[in-house]
Amino acid sequence: MNKIGLMVILCAITSVFAWKKETHFISLPLIEGAGLYSSIMLTRESGSPSTTIPAYSTMTLLCMNAAVGGFTALGPQEYYPTFRAIHRYVGFAVTAVGLWMSIAAANDKDIRPLERNVSYAYTGLTVVPLILFSF
Image (cartoon, rainbow, N blue to C red; front, side, top):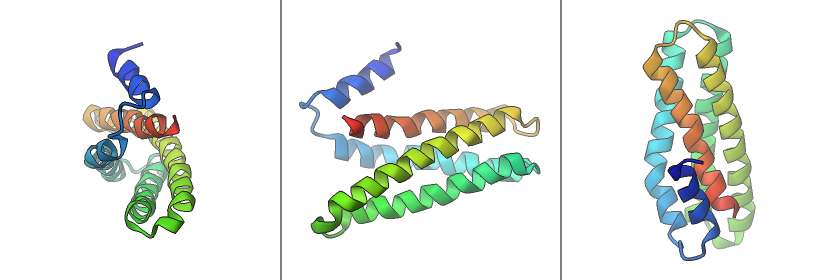
């Protein structure tokens, strides 16, 4: 296991790390930016529906998850448990579609290596919040 994976697991299971929420807000621009960048570039570079469909799906789910997450964080507290669950479910869908997008990028010869690697990194980054907040 690499050091980053060990750090994520340690942060998730240790109650000393009460800064999960702040870390989530700090990491959002990186995660969302990687997802939007790779989605946009895949739609621009590929003419294949097998690549553009997961890219558009990723953009749609990212926007939906950002809206639900924002309401969860800033909305009325009585809705927090319900919207936190919805935010988590959409997060799992984002990860699944990110994996689909990465596989599509790997199989598309029109995608440049940089965009392909960013889509791989994005898929990996989407897993981190799910692991951190699942424990």
